[in-house]
Length: 143
Image 1 (cartoon, rainbow, N blue to C red):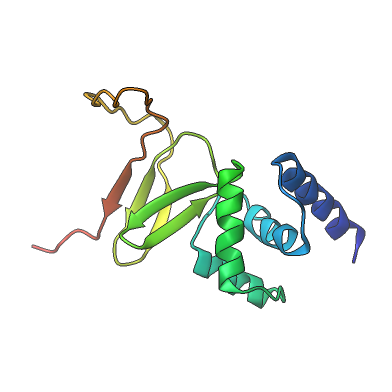
Image 2 (cartoon, rainbow, N blue to C red):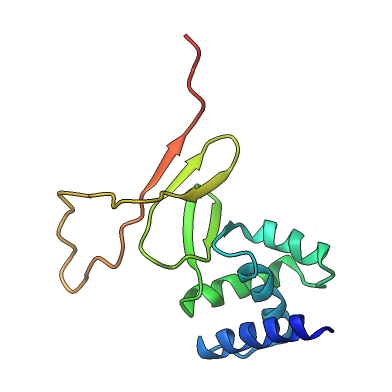
């Protein structure tokens, strides 16, 4: 292992520890794949494919478990876009998304807030934690 790779793993190891998770070999390998490329949106299946391509022997169930643990620890944000299709977002700040139908691509809406008005009052004892907006896109239809 070269020094650059070791330095990167120490950073990922620290990030996982600070989130309150035990830095197992598989968690560190998956976190390294998730966070090495900046902000991104991945499904569990996509991360599983990346892990296998990188030589990380991990089951799809382990990937799902790790992603949900990372989400509960505040390292990821979960986005439900299509019925059963779930994406995990490495950018945990409040922001919204575009989704391209038919391509299963999701990306952040850049620059500027999206305003939501007339939100209903939450039930007694509850508060609104976040509002997720997904704007669905498709190619313009030819007339």
